[in-house]
Length: 148
Image (cartoon, rainbow, N blue to C red; front, top):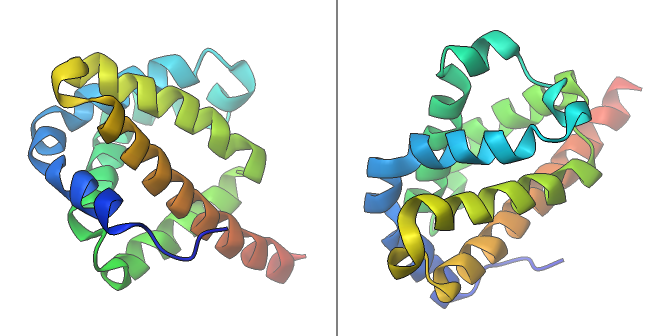
């Protein structure tokens, strides 16, 4: 597991901030549409938060926050703690993370188009996503162990 992100990834992810600010909810809405093709995963989510649009807005804000702070991850400590608590409450497991990546990355390209969501941008986001997923998985493992 990588303990840090490459400077190139950090620069690319940070550069996507304006596009995420403008199109983040469209990206997360497209991502959830893909993700919810898996009924097991869909059942883990609050349907009312999806229907109201609240969940896509929250996730879009979290993704933007990650992009804008990817070079100072300590600023995300509170957000990470809240995500970990929510994930443990809803039963998120390590094998769910690849499913989210498989929905998120194509949604970024779908919404932003190939001119903005180039192969380099998607590769950077794949690296950044995996880095964050590894962090969350490790923290969730601690929380699951503490709860047992």
